Length: 111
Length: 114
Image 1: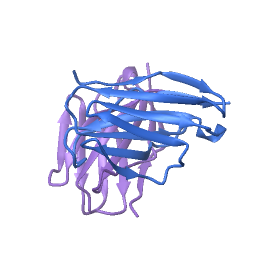
Image 2: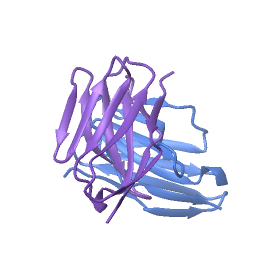
Image 3: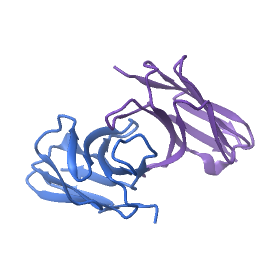
Image 4: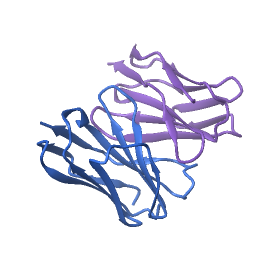
C-alpha cells in the first residue's frame, strides 16, 4: 500500500530564506507526482507536476525534483516571501484515478 | 476558464436534513472527483466520475450520494449525516479520463453537521 510522508510537518523561516520541503513515498511504481499549495479552509492549487520519466520541473521561484528509485521528491522555494505561507502537499499518482496525498508541511514565512 | 466552482462555500445542516453540494467546471475535463478533508489532514478520495460514469466509490457510506448529470456538473447529495461527517468537501477535475494529469481543485464547501 502506497504511503506518502512529508517532513517537516511544520516550518517557520525568515523572509528571503531558501528552503526545501521533502516528500517520501514507499512504492516507486508511480506515474506522476504533484506538489500543491493549500491556504487555510481553501482548495488545493497545483504548483508543479513531474511525470515519472522526468527528474525536475521549475516554475518561477519553485523547483521540484523527483528520484523515483529512492522514493523521494523535494520542493525548493527560492527567496521565500510571507505570501508563500501555506500548507504544501505532495501527491503521487499510481493509477486508477488515485492520488495519494502526503501529510503536508505547514510553512510560515516571517516578515 | 480554468476554474472549478463549488457551491455553497459553507453549509450547516442537522442530522435529519437533506442537502446537496454542487461542482461545475467548463474546461472540458472528463474526470471529476469528490474528496473529503478533515482539519490538518490530507484529502481523502470519495468518488470519481470518468466520462460521466461512476468509476470509483471508495466504500463511502450511502448517506453520501454522488451524481454527474453532464460532463460539466457534479453533485453530492447528503442525507442523514453524522457530526463526524463535518469536513471540507473538495471537488476536483482532470482533463483526460485516466487521471494521470494535473488536478484542478475547487475552493471547497465547509460542512458542519449539528
